[in-house]
Structures are given as C-alpha cells and as structure tokens.
Amino acid sequence: MLKLDNINLFYGEIQALWNLSMEIKEGQIAALLGANAAGKSSTINAISGLEKISGGKITFLGKEIHKMDPHEIVEEGIIQVPEGRKLFNYMSIQENLELGAYSKRAKKDFKKNLRMVFDLFPILEERKNQFAGEMSGGQQQMCAIARGLMSSPKLLIIDELSLGLAPILVQKLLKALVDIKNSGITILLVEQNVKQSLAISDEACVLENGRLALSGKADELLNNPHLKKAYLGM
Ligand code: ATP
Image (tube, rainbow, N blue to C red; front, side, top):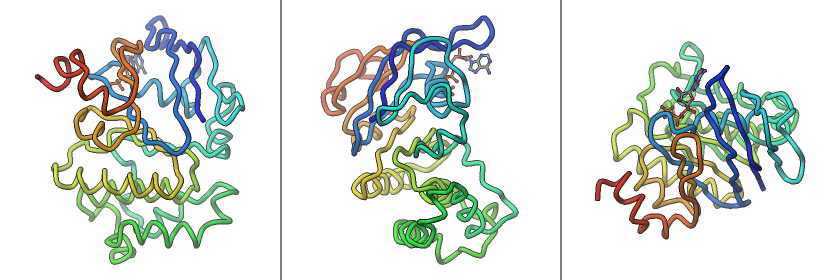
C-alpha cells in the first residue's frame, strides 16, 4: 500500500534518513520503532509531506506522493495523528471532531464516521460538549485518534500513542487500534514502547541512526536477539 524506496532526508547539512526503504501492507498494523532521534518522526513527516525528501520516492496505492503538498496527501487518504495530540483546548470535543472532517472525502462520510468514533470511544459522546482541554490525557488521545478517523483515512499514522499515559490506558488505546484495523483502516504506529506495540502489530520496522536496522513480522521480531537486547533490556 505504502512504499518508501531509498529515501534520504536532510535538515540543512544534517542527514536524518539514509537510503531508507520500507513497505506497509494494506489492512495491517505496522509499527515503526526506534530510540530517541532514530528518525521515526522524520520518516512519518516525509510520508505526510511535511518534510521533503532529497532522494528516492514514496508511493501510496501506486501513486508517487513525495512531491505532493501535505493537503494533497491528506486527500489521498493518509492522515497523521500528531504527537502531543494538538487538540484545540478551548473547543468542544464535537467541534474538534468536526475539524477532522475538512477534506472533500471526509465531508461526505461525516455522519457515518461520527457514529463510528462514538461507538469506538463512548466517553467522547458522553462528553462531546466539554472543552477538549478539560479531558484527561487518555481521553485527549482518544479524541485525537477520533479526529484522525473523521478524515476517512485509508492509512492512519499515529505518532507516540503512549506518550505520558498510564499503562492501563495505553492497553485500552492499543485495543482500539485493533478495532480500527478490523474496520479496514491500515495503521502505522510510531512508538518507543516496543513490547506493547509489537503485541498488536502485524509487521514492524526498527530504525537506528536514520537507517533501517530490522524489519519483519512482529512476532518474529519479539524473539530477535538484537531487539531483545537493545530495546527490551533482556
Ligand atoms: P524522537 O522519538 O525523539 O522524536 P525520532 O526517532 O522521531 O526521535 P527524529 O525526530 O526524526 O527522530 O530525528 C532524527 C534526527 O534528525 C535527529 O538526529 C534529530 O536531531 C534530527 N532532526 C530532527 N528534526 C530536525 C530539525 N528540524 N532540524 C535539525 N535536525 C533535526
């Protein structure tokens, strides 16, 4: 579905991604893992068009997208849920969700998508008139994911889902990702929390210093000696 082919990305003179190639298959949850500064954000920002690559290509459903503007990539169906949630704190939950549905494709499916996100996260419906800024961290993350879903994504990219959240809430959110996948939406999950994300993922890529260090089926990676040593402290 999504293919990164030998991409390079620079910030001025600093090279953040080095000949990176990876593929995400339709209908799966793929995890993008790696330590701080490994290049995870750079990779997803390249996919979303927020950073321009200087070599290689990115194709989505057979179409080259790396020269497109971010809003055009959104219209193609790639939606990024940003790290730190970035909700409008002084707007209600409902208004935040409405803002997710700005693309042409999403407007058409507004009612259906709103029902889907309220079924997925009932607390958002109960509190739909409350300011987003008054919600707990976990509820804000639910709202951020729901806002992404309101855009009718084909590929939903979630940056640092577990950031600052209690483990029990992370479990709940990861379970919701499986429900989202089962509804037909492909997910790219960017995480530092290796064990929990591999548990719900089909495949994973591990970045180190802007390069692909490992990739493969999630259950096989869980038993990989390098990954165990470097990321799981085993
Ligand atoms: P984190 O989990 O800390 O966000 P990451 O895996 O997402 O890390 P990136 O943010 O992609 O990693 O960073 C990769 C490299 O690029 C790092 O060395 C970082 O310092 C550098 N970098 C990222 N953004 C910029 C920028 N705007 N200008 C200069 N260097 C940058």
